Image (cartoon, rainbow, N blue to C red; front, side, top):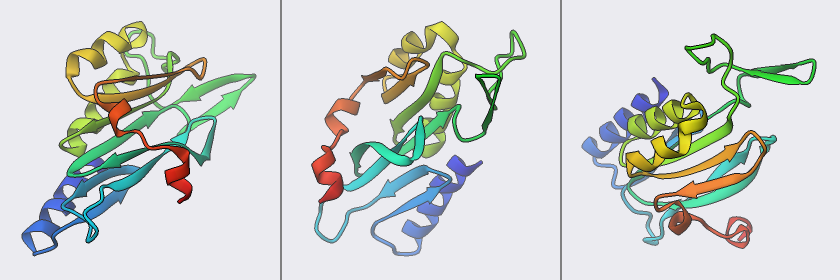
Length: 162
């Protein structure tokens, strides 16, 4: 629901004469219009291992970013993480990926694709490539993978601090 709410609030703001802004609900973000200085907005993506730290940043204009992961709503028991996304075939939490971030024109689409990718198991990469969107994945071994135009959207750490 939060992805839909991002899209809807952005739409309502535009309809009420707001030329540009950023709507963020629970980490899912819709960016619309332009800033006064014409630069795109810089959006940070949390590090799954330490959600209070920004691990990566992207530059967005008139787009949305949504992330799904196993680190915000989970618990660890006897050295194993139990997240809130369940594999329908086993009934157990998914375990192949730590997080999936997707850039799409609408936050609803970005959120749906990110969540579905988390549920794909070993076929997550094929699924994401088929969607034609920009994406970034942190797998269960904390290795980072990116596809689509995500590499073009990345911003250096120096820009985050500056």
